[in-house]
Amino acid sequence: MEVVDDHSVERASSALADVDTPGWSRRFDLLSDSHRLEILLGLHRAPGICVSDLAAALGRSENAVSQALRVLRGQGWVTSTRVGRSVSYRLEDETVHDLLHWIGARHG
Image (cartoon, rainbow, N blue to C red; front, side, top):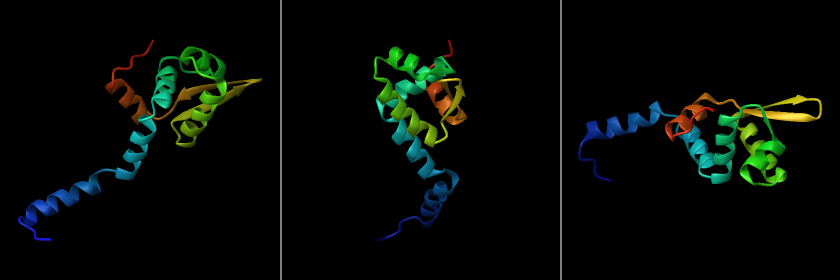
């Protein structure tokens, strides 16, 4: 491979050190699923919502919503709180919160 401009090569390669590319790739991968994105938008607008209410709001099965929440919770994006038999969920990751605002999400 022939290098034309060493300075440009150095600047371009140094850009990789500035960004957590694996972390951002995971974020974009998770956000690329419209079902998970809808769940995040629902949690953004209604923090503390339970699975059954979120499923009803999205027109999805509780099982499908629970499975997606498990993935999001595993990434640290969502937290859950149990009160008696009910479990409520909320968006926890500030970067994801900011991304949702960037795409147009608003609070209630």
